[in-house]
Image 1 (cartoon, rainbow, N blue to C red):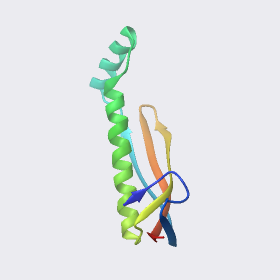
Image 2: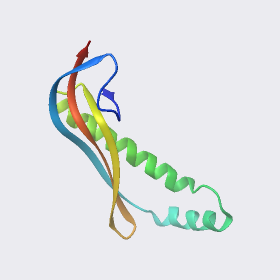
Image 3: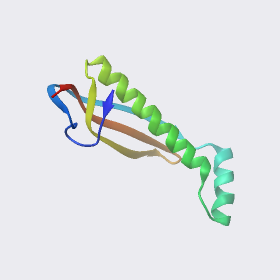
Image 4: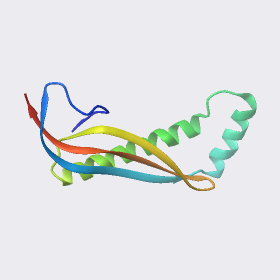
Length: 106
């Protein structure tokens, strides 16, 4: 699956647009991670527990978007974007979305 943030792929021609494809996940913070994060906040530096959680959420969202694109017959996604949304205190959604397309070599 080719994925790009641009609206075209070099060396490829879009022959069909299958439409919007998306994948999301909603994650809640964990009390153990919050305690470690609070300690790191005092000392300064990267909060690796949250970095890892966001990276995992991003990958899961991408995997779900790819699965939807494949189910719709796409072999590529153009105009990939990520967005986040706070669902409630301590929980957030991470959404990956783009346009599923069928591409061929030029």
